[in-house]
Length: 297
Image (cartoon, rainbow, N blue to C red; front, side, top):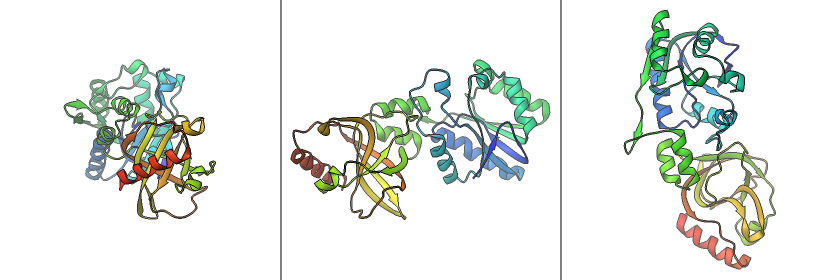
């Protein structure tokens, strides 16, 4: 994967997929696939433009990222994207007018074509739209390809809707819009190892503070390690039985034996099972975990 700073540019001829690409949902994937197809026709590479941070946090309207920048980079790699153009979204960037943004793009890169969704906005206060972009591209002979909205049950797929589903714990619907399972990637850290004493050793992953806080509870999950898929039970959130309020994920990998400390893993969320419950003792918690395990098998 090659990442290029928007303001440094490149001399390579490219097709650029424009958008925020803040969750790589099915609509984003449709734009990326179109960019890939156009690049084959024009015999050049293609690149995806995205921001390295949370745009909404700068605009003071954020409830967190679906995926961090690094998680998005990894997902783009899996989609065979080999070039990403990125920059940090700042207050100053938010004040760049549409024409200046466009001129910076075509000055810093050898753009042969642009691909975007029909709701794409750019420039200060989002005044730039596909009509303006079409006019600007036409004036200098750059192809513009506008991709229709992707819908689910008649509703346009959006990151905002995905966040709302995650906040409500509606993981299965969120996964449909994402076109894959929602996931959390992080390093496995040491915990209090109470789960190990109970016969349910867990891989504890601290959640990136920039990510959206999904509904706290217990989820059916899976983890892929060394090419093998392990079904899991993941507690997302606090641990009321032990009066611990910090938010993290604790995942029991059914059938896995080994030391994961210090390793980076990705936990994929499949289904919401139940809310977090404060049990009277460890024995009650153990019985519930055994019941949860039967549900994921």
